[in-house]
Length: 254
Image 1 (cartoon, helix red, strand yellow):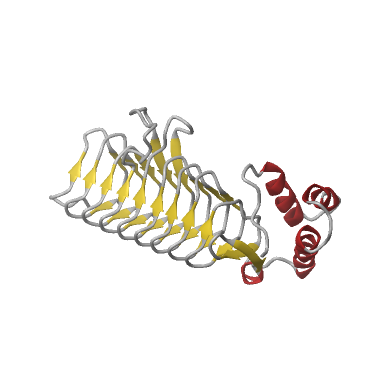
Image 2 (cartoon, one colour):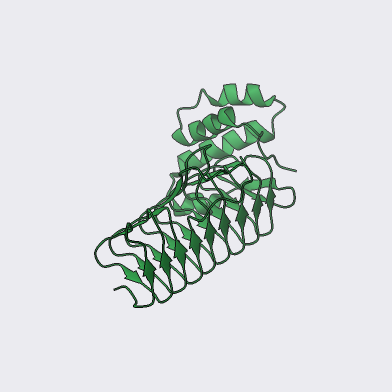
């Protein structure tokens, strides 16, 4: 159902069972897939919205990036199936650098969150109220960012990370840890998150051992990673691969 006051571009593709609320504007080159509900007074353009999403009032998706280098190049936003976008979220399209901004499946973007250009937000990520994520940030599966967090451009946040409210992230955060503070420091392992993921106790022990080797031994970071690469645990491999691919350096305990 499309409300009579909604404005829908002639080249937009609206699939079956889509609801579009009053005074919402669906701009050019937009695809809204089956079962998605868009509340009133939203603006969406140059975007692909997946199936069974819900986008709440006053959200802005696909507007031009807040980047002075953007010169009008053809870019877009992709939002995966089952994702919820709460009130007043801003989700900008990409620049020439990556071409698109991506939010994965079954994510929750809470009210007033901002996702900047060229970000990659993977599946099952939660972004808390009034959290701002700068351009080119990558956030891996299952990460949770609490309220009022700031994430510096080009930072990477690993799988199943939990970041406390008000944190300022200016370096990469390895998988399976918690981080907090300004500037953020690693505060321990995200044991609650691992339990919720039903990670086996033996694997949790492997992650604990990796944490001790990285942050509590006298080994250099390179030597610690080399030692951890002997582990057969896929969770430890997630950590070592993340560190080896880090460009900004990793957040450490205080």
